[in-house]
Image (tube, rainbow, N blue to C red; front, side, top):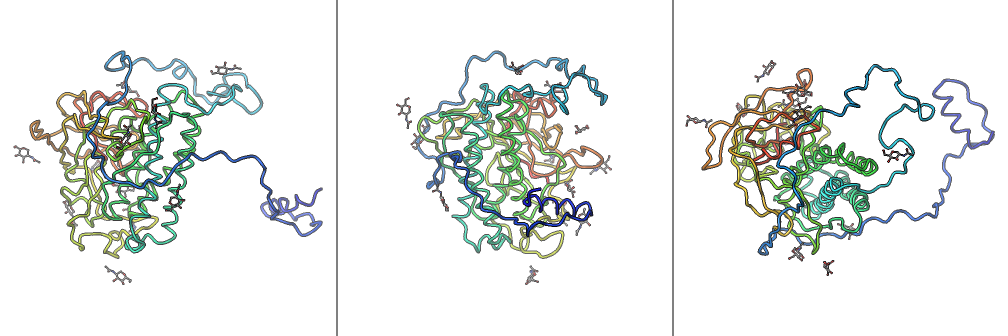
Length: 468
Ligand SMILES: *[C@@H]1O[C@H](CO)[C@@H](O)[C@H](O)[C@H]1NC(C)=O
Ligand SMILES: *[C@@H]1O[C@H](CO)[C@@H](O)[C@H](O)[C@H]1NC(C)=O
Ligand SMILES: *[C@@H]1O[C@H](CO)[C@@H](O)[C@H](O)[C@H]1NC(C)=O
Ligand SMILES: *[C@@H]1O[C@H](CO)[C@@H](O)[C@H](O)[C@H]1NC(C)=O
Ligand SMILES: *[C@@H]1O[C@H](CO)[C@@H](O)[C@H](O)[C@H]1NC(C)=O
Ligand SMILES: *[C@@H]1O[C@H](CO)[C@@H](O)[C@H](O)[C@H]1NC(C)=O
Ligand SMILES: *[C@@H]1O[C@H](CO)[C@@H](O)[C@H](O)[C@H]1NC(C)=O
Ligand SMILES: *[C@@H]1O[C@H](CO)[C@@H](O)[C@H](O)[C@H]1NC(C)=O
Ligand SMILES: *[C@@H]1O[C@H](CO)[C@@H](O)[C@H](O)[C@H]1NC(C)=O
Ligand SMILES: *[C@@H]1O[C@H](CO)[C@@H](O)[C@H](O)[C@H]1NC(C)=O
Ligand SMILES: *[C@@H]1O[C@H](CO)[C@@H](O)[C@H](O)[C@H]1NC(C)=O
Ligand SMILES: *[C@@H]1O[C@H](CO)[C@@H](O)[C@H](O)[C@H]1NC(C)=O
C-alpha cells in the first residue's frame, strides 16, 4: 500500500469507527500543486463602464428583428405521445445502454456535446441572458464605486458583505464568457446603463428585482432550448444568479426566499424589464427578436424599506421594474431605524416581517403606458402590444398563473385596480409571495409553467410585483 493513501483510510476509519491501519509515516495532507501547463480558457474581453445615465441622442428606431411570421398565435396541440404512453410504474421498460444506465434521456447516446447554440430560439434566448450578465457585471461594480462604506454600513452591509458584492460582480465575467463563447463572434457586447437608483436601499432593491427577472427569464426558456449542452452551461451559471438574488434580498433585510418555487417568465418579459435600463450599445450590436411591452406602474407597490410596507402610495422609481423609492419617507417609518424583531431590516440571513408587504384581499392600483415608447439600447426598440382592452390582472409566481378581474378600468386614464387573490401552491403556502410578476391582459388564457409564453399576444403591460 502506498502511504499517500493513508489519510483517506484514516477518514474512512473515523467514519466507520474501525481502527485505522498504522501509518507508515506521518501523512502529508498538502503537497505543491504544479500548474497543468494547459491554458485556462480566455475570459471575455470586458471593461469598467465609465458612463452612466440615460441615452439622449435622437433615436434611430428600428424595433425588434423579425423574419417571415407564420401566424399570430400558436395553436395548442396534443402532448407528445412518448410522455403520454410511458407507464410511470417504477419498472424498467427498455434495454440498458450500459450498466447502471436506464434507457432514454436526451443527449445520452454518446453523441459528442457541442457547447453552442443550435437554433434561432437558442441564439436569441442566450443573447438575452448575456445582456443580463453584462448589466450585472457593471451594476454590482457600480454600486461599490458609487456609494461610500458608511452608506453601505448604515444598512448593515459591512466590509465582508461588500467583498461578497465584489465577488458577485466578478462571477459575471465567467457567466458572460460562457454565454458569449456559445454564441460566437456576433454575441452582444457590453453596453452603457442607466439605473433608477439614488441611494443604497434603492440600489439593493433594484439588484434584488433585476436578478429575479434575469433568473426567471432563464427558467422560462431553459427546458425549451434545442442545444442540451448550451442549456447545461447556462444552468450552471444561473444557479449562481439565483444565489445572488437571495443575497440581495438578505442585504435588504427581507426574508431570503419566501416562495417554495421560483417562477419562469417568457423571454419577452425579461427583455421588457431589462431594456429600459440599457442606455447605449456599441455600433453593430446584434439585435434581438423579443417584444417590449408597455410599462405597468403599481401605484401602491409594497415598499420593503417601510415598517408597514403595504401602507404606501407612489413609492416607485419607474414602471416595469417598479423598484422602491425612499424619497420623502420620514425616518420613523423606515424599518432600517428599528431594532425590534419583526420590524428591523438591517442586512441579515433572515428577517421576519410581522407586517406583511402584501396579502390576499389587498387592492392593487395600476396605471399603464400606451404602446409606442422608445426603449432599450440607443432607444432603438419600441414598446408594442397586440392585446385589446385590458380586463384581467395576471399574477405570475411560483408554479401559478392566476387571473383576477380589473375593476374600475379607465381606458382614458389607463388606470384600474384589482384584488390580490387568495391562492396557494401546496398546503397553505401562499402562491402570491416574494418578488414576482404582474401583467394586465385582455383574456384569462389558461397557461402553465411550460407554455406561459402563449399568453404574450394578450399582454397589455408588465410589472414586477413585491408580494413578500
Ligand atoms: C474594474 O474596476 C475594479 C475596481 O473597481 C478593478 O478591480 C477591476 O480590475 C477593473 N476591471 C477592468 C476590466 O478594468
Ligand atoms: C444520438 O442522438 C442524436 C440526437 O437524437 C442523433 O442525431 C444521433 O444520430 C444519435 N447518435 C447515435 C450514434 O445513435
Ligand atoms: C410569504 O412567505 C413567508 C414565508 O413562508 C410567510 O411568512 C409570509 O406570510 C408569506 N407572505 C404572504 C403575503 O403570504
Ligand atoms: C449607440 O450610441 C452610441 C453613442 O452615441 C454610438 O457610439 C453607437 O454606435 C450607437 N450604437 C448603435 C447600435 O447604433
Ligand atoms: C460595423 O459593420 C460595418 C459593416 O459590416 C463595418 O464596416 C464596421 O467596421 C463595423 N463596425 C464595428 C465597430 O465593428
Ligand atoms: C399597515 O398598512 C395596512 C394598509 O394600509 C393597514 O391596513 C394596516 O392597518 C397597517 N398596519 C399597522 C400596524 O399600521
Ligand atoms: C438599536 O440598538 C442599539 C444598540 O443596542 C442602540 O444603540 C440604538 O439606539 C438602537 N436603535 C433604535 C432605533 O432603537
Ligand atoms: C417568525 O415568523 C413566523 C411565522 O409568522 C413565526 O412563527 C415565528 O415565531 C417568528 N419568529 C420570530 C423570532 O419572530
Ligand atoms: C384564504 O383561503 C384560506 C383557505 O380557504 C382561508 O383559510 C383564509 O382565511 C383565506 N384568506 C383570506 C385573506 O381570505
Ligand atoms: C370604483 O368606482 C366606483 C364608481 O365610480 C367608486 O364608487 C369606487 O370608489 C371605485 N373604487 C375604487 C377602489 O377606486
Ligand atoms: C398553483 O399550482 C399548483 C401546482 O401546480 C396547483 O395545484 C394549483 O391548482 C395552482 N393554483 C392555482 C390557483 O392555479
Ligand atoms: C398550456 O398547457 C396546459 C396544460 O398544462 C393546457 O391546458 C393549456 O391549454 C395550454 N395553454 C395554451 C394557451 O396552449
